[in-house]
Length: 296
Length: 325
Image (cartoon, rainbow over all chains, first blue to last red):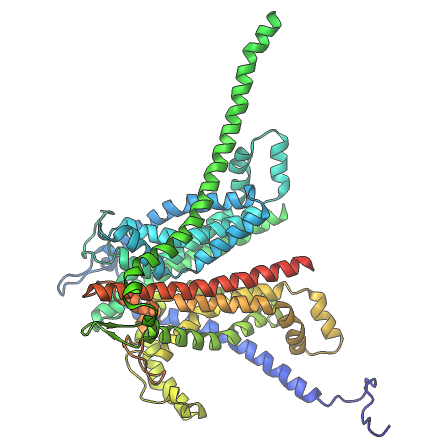
């Protein structure tokens, strides 16, 4: 029995690897905490830099005047209006279609078709934004020229899978009993969907919409091919190309002129302020609505 | 007789009403089906149209375009290898850096952090995903890039890693493969860690508790039980992050340096597929150049679609296996 130095069933014996195992455990803990701290630090460094570099250039004039032509002082009003119009049009196109797709998936389609559609939407979500830009360029811009409407189409394609998936997921947690109660009263299916299911899910749908809007508001790549060559003036003509915030930041970021760079920082601060407010609103709203639904 | 007349008079009304109801239902269902069909057709149409646009170039250059290392508008020499190299190398560096970090963040949020701390930190990591790529690129080109070239690159060159040829050479001031890779890392960490967190939350508590009861440390329970349980999901999460990195055009364009050659060192400038397509938006100088750009876009689409489809297949299999359990 001399070959057995340690009795494997003796729990009081000191395990050889215990010290090593404790060290590995400690290292793991430190690395995990470190990673989380690093991720938070990156966010704060980026936001801090934006505030530090952009805040001084922010003013009422900056937000209400169009971009300068030759050395004058100016702002980003033209790009703000352009972005608002394009994102607004994209919402008008994308939201109805997305909600209908989600309704089909959760109310009508069988499980197999619904799963297939889920994959289609997820793959569509994975199509690079720049490829969507090239697609819209090839289908609409070639032969017609750039236009804000085409930019809105490109953004709508990016919004579609995001809003549809968010809506479908929230429709699925609307309790079966709500629908059954409505059917039992003799209400038709489409009426039930329209007046019972959708209102119950409206919070979740809005959350999905808000997050999608926040994401496409900062998209640059699809706009480059559809609405990037525009004059620096305030315009409401959506049939022509309009200046937008992301394209302005993109072009100015690669400019050697410090004045244009500082305009890019301030514009980025405005953009990220919008994006963060939208995200935080969505978060607060989603938490409350989901608890209500799951509680019922 | 009177009763029949009564019935006859009433019948059309109910019939009409019933049909009206049916028409409403059918119409609504029809619209919903049409929307779902439109989304499916859209995906196919995008794939078809991008190939259609690239077709003249594909016919002109053939498949050898893919491994041709040239981009010269003057001599009309075009190839994709420079940009494929840039896309693949930046994305793979980002993958190697982001995967362990993302998993560690997800483990911190699910296993280590107290609940009160986990929720706000999870929100912060999610907000990192909300930063528009053009804003991250702005920070990358004007602040982060110069810091990387002046401090991080020389520091790496002083470690044993500096002996590797890819870490040699003079760091390029106007952006580099490595800077772009780091920016991509920041972009994919929130995506991968959010999915990993969901996966780890759904690992049955009994399994990890069992491992802990057998005397394993927390890390051993994570490595032996959670990773084993969630491995396919983690693979899918990593692939989704990779797909995002492949497709990113703007932030890479701002930070990679836009140089039409394969650099010998990662600290030098290069270019990627998406970035090259993005920088030519103002218009190419010749028809060949324009169609070559579209060829690049088609290659990019194939790479990122393939990555995404593989990720989806893994997810579907994983879910089917879990439903079976």
